[in-house]
Image (cartoon, rainbow, N blue to C red; front, top):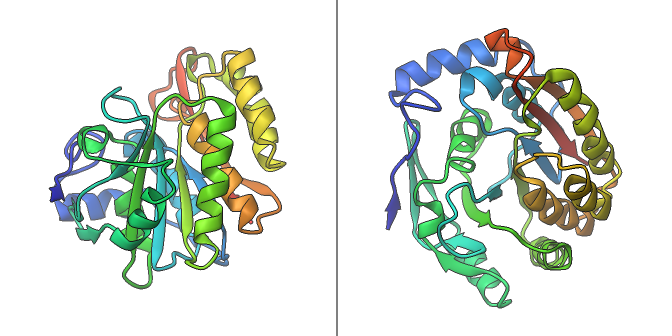
Length: 266
């Protein structure tokens, strides 16, 4: 089973040449030293809005032969913990294989469910693949996981299980999330600083409960809890903020923005 792109032509160009041109523009500049990060947090909006932030993260990370993608479920379809059940994801830059062996390991825990429906139209993971393909130095496989609403204890348990299963199978964990939505830029920065601080300290309880308490509209705070718990098991000691911006930098409208953060967990 092959997954066709759902948002090529809207979130990013559908044609390889056009996509290359846009990414050349967004990703210009020296990437700096590459690190062996355990995980990253990257945005998933249209490339013209958040692509530069994504580039600044991916250009500084060594991409291993296995990538675990964790994103929120925007469509509401499928299982709450959905591991893609097919074999290949198509992109304008070529096909990417799904890691069937790792999928079977996770399904064996009973915490993950093989599912196609949650992935069918979901954009949060799809938009990461062109960046991964641009910066990877060797072929890699992916394990796409879409997460619905989970309570904190279940999210933490999932993350710890994932980390344990990856101890003998090195991987980069990619957490896909935008930050605050549709508020003014100053309020977004103030609210997002609360959650970024928690992520810098790998404090997933603080991340989860303050997102709820202060109604901070970070769409991927649950994938972030899962991903950060996993990277903690893998030895990460801190989160490092690489970039923070918002859609107003492109549109000129700072009264109603979507904000974007880029982080590495090392």
